[in-house]
Structures are given as C-alpha cells and as structure tokens.
Length: 96
Length: 326
Image 1 (cartoon, chains in turn brown, orange):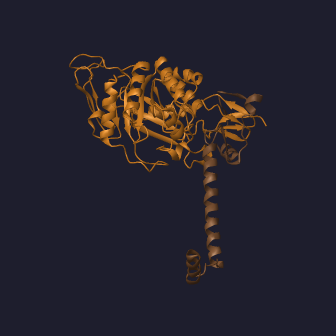
Image 2 (cartoon, chains in turn yellow, purple):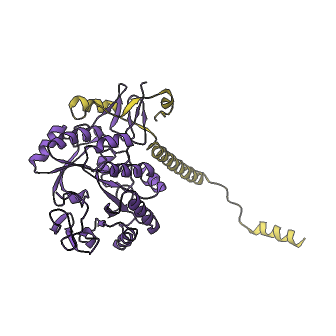
Image 3 (spheres, one colour):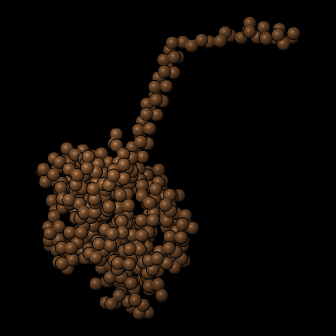
C-alpha cells in the first residue's frame, strides 16, 4: 500500500515523459541515412577488395583499343594461354 | 564469348572476352590473349646493380632497368604502386622500346646488364623473354627482380636466358601472403627452388614489416628453409619497411629489429645476410664468413671498396666467395 502511494506521488511530481518532436525525428533520420551511406561504401569497398585476385578484371577495352591504334599499347599475342575449357568457363565470374 | 585461360602465373585467370587478367595488362581481345605492354615500358632507368639488390653479381656496375605497368600481386605496402597497380591504358608515361631498341640503348649507355624490375616482370613475360634473348646474343646479362609468383613451366623456359634474380620472399607465412599481397606462399618457394636448380644466380629479399612478419621464430624458419633448399651461400637481404601506399599505419622497421633478424638468420646458418634501406649500416657490406674480413664496402648503393681477388676470393684466407664477380 505504501509502495502504491509512493508511485502515485512519483507520477505526480515527475515531469511528464517527453514525446518525440519533429526535429528530433529529422535528426535520427539524418543519422540513419549517414549510417546507410557508410554501410554502402564499406560493402562496395569489400566487394571490390574481394574481386582482387579472383581471376579477372573488367577493363576499359575502348581505351585499350585506342592505345593500340595510337601505338601506345600493343596487341602482341601472349604466350602461355589456351581457350578456356567448358569447366574453366564456368569459373568466369561476371563483373559488376 | 571466347574466354581464355592464362597459364603464366598461379592465379590461372580465366578471362572472358573484353576482360583482363588480374595483372591488368594481359587482355582478352577477340578471343586471343594480348600482351598489351609488350615493348611499351613506363619506367626506364640506369641503376647501380646494388639497387636491385644484387650484391654478389657484378658489383659496382650499371644496369639498364625497365618495367611496364601491371603486377600479379597487390601488396598493401607496394612502393611502385603507381606503376604496378595500373593497366597500360592508365599510364601517363609510355616509351616505345621494342626489344632490339632496349638492348641497343643499354649498350650505348655502357651497361653490361639489363634488369626487368620495379613492377613484376612476370606479367610482361613475352617482352622480358624476347629482350633477354637479344641481350644474351649481344653479350649482356639479364637480371630479374620478381616476387616469384609464376608457374614452373614458363619460369623454366625463361631461366635459360636469365643470369641473376633477386626474388622476394615476403614472409614465411601463407596467411601473410594472402592478407598483404593477395598471393600465396608455396608457388614462390617453388620458384626459388626452380631458379636455384636452373643455375640462375639467386639472391633473396625479405622486407621486414613491424608486427606483420618480423617474428624471430618466422625468420628462423625462413632462414633454415633457405639454407636447406637454396644453400647457405644464398644471400639474404633483410630490408627496412617504410610506410606507404595502403600501409601507412605502421612505423618504419626499427634498425634494432633488423639487427636481431640478421643475427637469427646468421645463427640459422646463412652466410651472407645483409640489411637494406639503412644507408651506412655495416651490414650493407660483404664480409668473409670464415675470418670476417671486410670484402666489399658499400655506402647506400655505392661500392666504395672492393678487396675481393680477381677470382672472387678473400684476400686474407683465400676462401672462395660465391657470386658472379666478372
């Protein structure tokens, strides 16, 4: 009984619970958006880091062809390769 | 889609049309793999042989050094990343130097040797091979500074034309290789053994990075492996790390750590252990392993004194010092 009385008196004397204001919601939204952007950046970085050393890279073939046409690069056929076998072809991971 | 499978390095990239290998410069155009930087180096310099570093191979001579863009490793601490981590089409500076022109230029500059270096010559293999063949006929030496991440067959073929190689052994730990370089350890060990078997003069460089590969027990295992598999006379260069590229969070290697590592490698039985990237350090120089006589005194990359006899012996005790001296 004494506890109930104490609770009542606490409820009367304690300031009312504050409700969310619009500006606070905006602030939380901004924090969430920032966190999302950071997460996207990190996941993109991890994805690119994961691509390194996984077999092949996407390159700007138009720029390479321009370099070859201009004589800055060469189209000398490489040694040490063969047409991919069907099994090897399966390993090709599509680029981004 | 005509995909091709590259056989050059242990990555064995399977490359679809319009793609490049992991090295960025071997490109599948029209179903054929193209060596796009063949005859198109982006770095040409004349260096002292000691810069490679090769300390037991024609000391004090100049070496005509070339490199193209591209690399099959992606070391977080790469000191040549502007060259190695780019494709040919991304380079601002490209020289047109086909193999005969390289050899001609080297001779005109009075160089007795060529070096394929800076990035990793594995990835511009065809250029190295053709240039080496012409250089050999012209009486020049071919030297190679590589991470050794190459398959055995292409390496054995190239070895017939190579005179010397400084090969990096970046750590004696596969986890380090995977985390820091994107490669693996075993193919590098295999390449070192192949170079030794093929009679190429071999020196090894180990860049000591604080906290990552400076554990003395690891140094001991590496040196023991070198002694057993490559021979106790194989020079080891323990090199000082400087923070750069994507590894700026670690300090330069303390000189004391290099000294401790050198002591460990000598205790394991290696006879020639040098300290690199610390100008003026006494371990830049070559000493007779028998009586401690100072044989070749170096300051930085300069040979300031060479007391070896004409046939490569210690003048005090007549001990033969392994190397290619003339």
